[in-house]
Amino acid sequence: MFPAIGLVVLLGMVFGGFVFTGGALGPVLEALPHEMIIIGGAAVGALIIGNNGKQLKALGAGLGKAFKGPSYTKKDFLDVIFLVSRLMKMLRVEGPIALEPHVEDPKSSAVFAEYPKLLKDTTLVHLIADTLRLVVVSSGTLDVHAVEEVVDNSIKTHHHEAMGPANQLQSLADALPALGIVAAVLGVVKTMGSIDKPPAILGAMIGSALVGTFLGVLLAYGMVGPLATRLKAVMEEDAAIYQTIKQIIIASLHGHPQPLVIEAARSGIIHAKQPSFAEVFDGLRGK
Image (tube, rainbow, N blue to C red):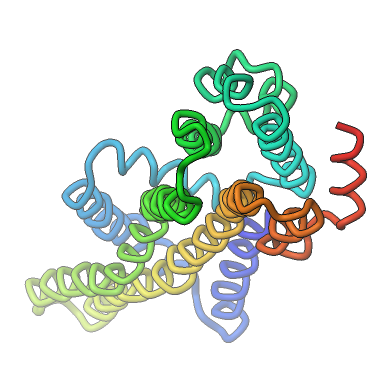
């Protein structure tokens, strides 16, 4: 919602301010389609050159995510604490054999089924299942620090991949001013080919060429760059749920008391989505 509002404010202030100070929008609007064909086409071509089909698809999804915002709410963080805590309790009380069916086939697990939104996140499910599978097959002899290292590597790999669209957007933002110059230079070349025309015509052609530079800078620093920053922030906020999973598993494997496990889980969640200690503790007592 806020990115859309920001775009309206941006365009309103830029073009509205231009008109307010006496500028005529006619020449700008007349040149806009031609300059956008050059700049936009070059930008799309550059993206195709630098990325494969899967990365381009992820970029499209990333743009949608930048406008939609973070996927996880406070309730989702609370649910993931309940889910992982129940699995760790099952491991501790009933043993690895009881836990094994849940981690081998989460989609058929009655425990996972209680949290349908979390079950849709394959990365989240795999992180839980793959980590606990290590514990199950090791029959409790696995070093906790080794488990933590594996989890860290898994989260790091996912985070690097998830940040791909944001990095692509930032690279595009960095390139757009230069692509605007490309469009402007072509406009100047066109103008020089009509040097015998009257000054009024030449002035319009030069103005049209300068629109290319204007568009490149506006798109880079007013739209694409801020969208890249927004997407990075959204991905960072969503990534906290994977750290929550890690904290619960590692703290539980260390044999820490429940209050410390709860605080370990809550510590990496931003305050706006962080459940209170009482919410977590009371919820776990009711499970």
